[in-house]
Length: 492
Image (cartoon, rainbow, N blue to C red; front, top):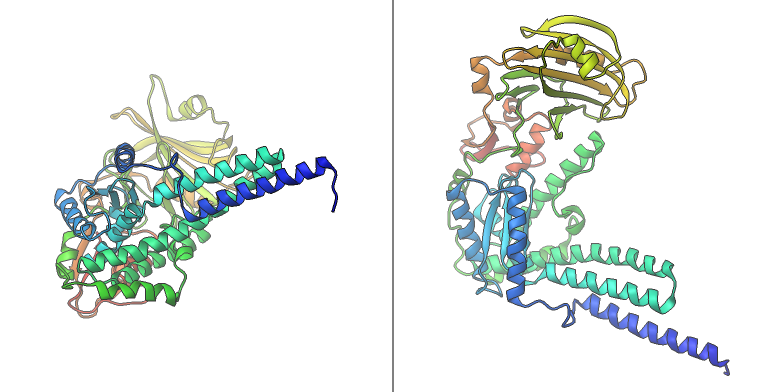
């Protein structure tokens, strides 16, 4: 069929473009890096060293050398059976409550103390470390980076070849979908390869499946809590999507590694492993205070107060913030320095610039103060009516500022009763309070006849979902109970 020359040239260019795009896409999907994108082992190690410094600066190392040494010992045992046994590996416990483990190029592997809180045997620990070692040996971080660069090149070729920015943007969107897919691909590959490493090191790969179930249970609880609390869930590696329930092919692939187990032995018994976690710090590394049930203690300032049941402590730039169960109300505590001639009332009207109604002087916890409602004051929800109190501690030359606001308040304050109750619970800590306000830690105890998880949750200082949290960290979710004589983890 005859075509004008211009149309022929256009079709030739179009076919050349299609061939180039297909070639680049095939290379990207195959994970094949060009020489430009290749990375030597020396450069890989340098990259890991540079990122390692950033990780340590951000999270900090957990200060328990004996536990650090133990984690490194298990990690080195697994890494010695990997496909890159000559690489120098570094295993570090990060001082973070988030349940996480990850690896950097060049042999840098990290596990948080939050993750350790949910481990119940050395085999489970070996499963987590084996998974991360596999990320290193399979160069997943580098392969992902290369694919991203390849996709960027692909987008550029498409844009240049077509002259249509719309296609360039479409390429970016498509690239994002591909990268999301690779995350699942690499996670599953790390499980299968990691299971082989741990099996060769003498650990049963069944622990990999147990560990995944624990993490999936924690994800389910977190997702449900986040739904109730109307916030984004903090989940580990997206395990619910990467490891679907009842995936028999996946489970068979992991169990295939059982054939590789050599001289299997739990190098330490479960009781010995749990004892190593005794005293592990629990909760946020940034301590703004200690919570016991619905009481908040701030030992440094020597103050305490009660907050409504079901509310939770949330991070804040400065001060302390409590948020209702569905995040429609917030109570905030902060401090400021006193200035000469200040009174609680003029502090509110001059320093805080509140337009006050229903204001009155009062004394709370032995401290002089002023309470009222500030119309259209700043709040986490924007300008809102704010229930506030200003309390003066002349000895410390501090002003305590307590403020509560509701998301949908116009003039009336829906949670005013809760705010007033919290304000009037404010008090100075007494000697026995400082003993109560110890930083929570993981404690290993032996279950007795009649011990139930519900009873342990009732005694726990955990504020919300204590029963679910304790069951997950002991591998007993959703309805398991400890056997008399069994060592279990509690928070105290």
